[in-house]
Length: 137
Image (cartoon, rainbow, N blue to C red):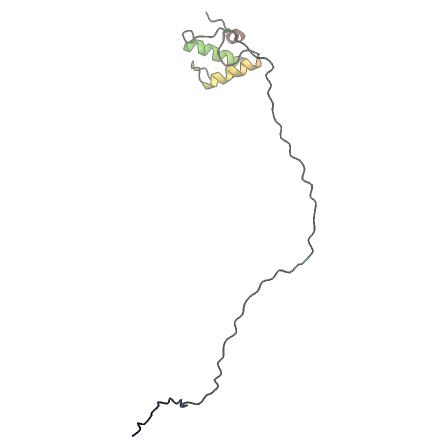
């Protein structure tokens, strides 16, 4: 006997027939920005005036030197003496409180007096005392 030859066959069967369905897909909007030339480019020439600044230049005209000047020492600079100097400065047109203390106000008044009278500036020299018309003995 000849055995039977079998073969498995797969068959596709339509269960539901093909159909057409309409689906509404909403529109998608995009904003596109574009540049549009309104007027042609124009070149303008604007004159900007120069700016100047004053620069002070100091030149040594005299090499300087050492001078010996007599100053009023701390021993002789008592409250009474400083009070006399303050009164003399006030009388000379450089008002300063007469408190007997050689403070910043007295120093500023003294230096202004020295500048105005061509005296050495910065120390209470005997030439400043003499220029104020004081005689400290």
